[in-house]
Amino acid sequence: SFSFFTMIACYFLLITLVIWWMNKSPKRLIPVYIAITLWLGLVVSENKKVENEQLVVFHTFGKTRIGHQKDREFTLHHSDTISPFASYPVKSFLVERRVSNYTSAKIPKVFRYKSKWILCLDSLGVYPRVEKPIVLLTHNSKLHLDRLIDSLQPTLILVDGSNYPSVVDRWRTTCLQRKVSFHYTGKKGAFVF
Image 1 (cartoon, rainbow, N blue to C red):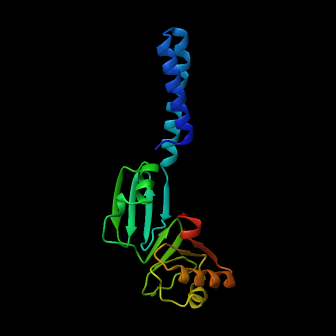
Image 2: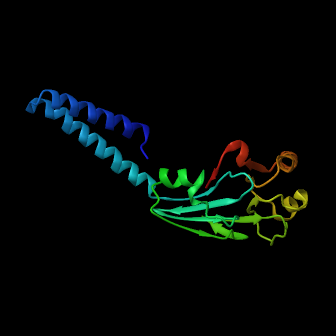
Image 3: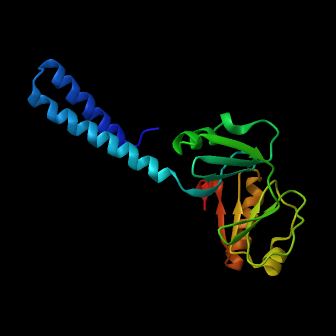
């Protein structure tokens, strides 16, 4: 994938090459060298930006997909049986982040990411006691959200695309009343840690 600035540098390089080709003179090579240097500098700097770690909760209708990228390695935790790497938004993410190796895994019920506990609740609604986690609600979890907030005191309630909009609206109302942060991937987009 090209960023906007890399694309502009590439066009600049092409234009300078065409100008040089039309009138081959040593003087016309200077802009070509400048364009090559600019383009390569942008490509290298963008590659360095990609090499970091992040966790992403994607918005996919009817499915839960959590991606963990560390440098060029990517693990997709998903709830469906079909390989989701060729579908949107995962495929676009892999291209944009220049991922070279990827694997898939089941969604863990509880895991730790950068000193934060993340608790994934599915349709069963059964959860362990974890202090102040980020709670990901998936597949229309059968739970009493007020009790969950009282017992766990979550820092954030995160809802993905596997939930019905009516259930999401009910959860949003509860979170507003209880003054708990709420993020729905259907409205605000993918959640990136």
